[in-house]
Image (cartoon, rainbow, N blue to C red):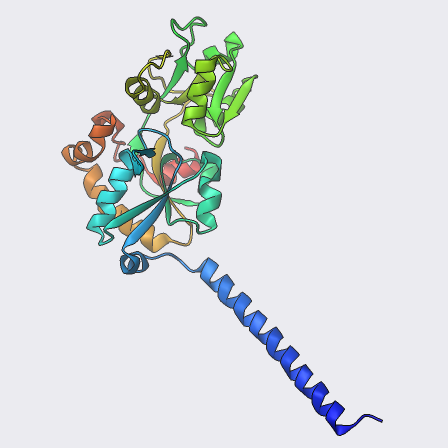
Length: 296
């Protein structure tokens, strides 16, 4: 026969179990709410710091002398300073991990001049176009395979290096270029050509020119810039700042401020000019994020 003491013990244990289950459910609910909660300008102002991801691709965003710098970093420092967020912190991330890390809330936005594409628009939200750019090829001295664009790479059978997740890797896939070597970052692509493991490295023209001009002893050549043609259509890539889809108010506040810089060529050049960007990199005002997201 069960005693009253045993009954009281069972009741206490049952109550403790129920309390533990309720606490776990509450904690899980709180965590889920935090993960889904939008990052707002107000929350960044309270912290005083915006945290950005960068892929260490010069001259967009890269490390130098222990600090993060570059054209997009300078742009973001300026915009967020105007928005009342005085500090910027960088988190170095492989290119292919930029958007996944953003959606995991490891940082507030991506500062990498990332091209706006339909696939990426399905994963994240983009600002207005900020940087218009062309493609170039880094090749061995003398350009022995006479490479000039992506089609010439395919026809020559050259071994191509391209960054994982970068638009040049997409070009290679669309054109079915064989022998494509995917590398994690800009320096790995440069090293692949320099060491002979790859014949050519495709990247934005401004990136390759900056690397050539600012790396003493780098024994390579950079071809003239070109616009890639895929399935008979000229590509018109434009880079932008990347936000999480739920952070629409933060993106809208950012857009309102960055548009002032984009409409003022002198101000644009003051901020991005020191990193090799020119007025030609300012996107046409008629080019919209919506157009690029739709693939038109």
